[in-house]
Length: 81
Image (cartoon, rainbow, N blue to C red; front, side, top):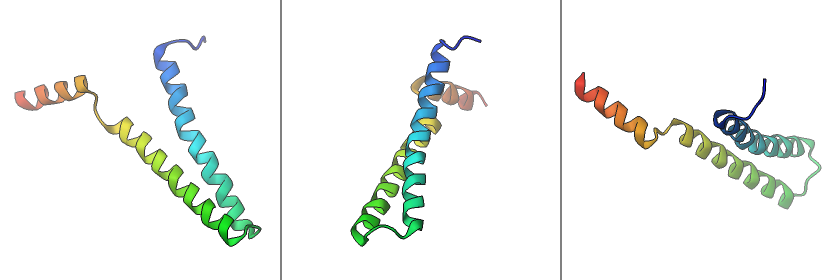
């Protein structure tokens, strides 16, 4: 199966947008559990984890927010119901 459609490219981009922050969160969580970081490094690791959680939340919001055309269809359906 050849990957080349717009949908496939969007899906790959979405996978990247989800996996990248998760990899950072995972890496810093492992470092935090190792007790090998200075207090300053621990603080920075926590800041980065929170930043990446915000990035993931933004991706999820984009996925769940309807596009203009989807919104128009929803409004039309609700008006006829």
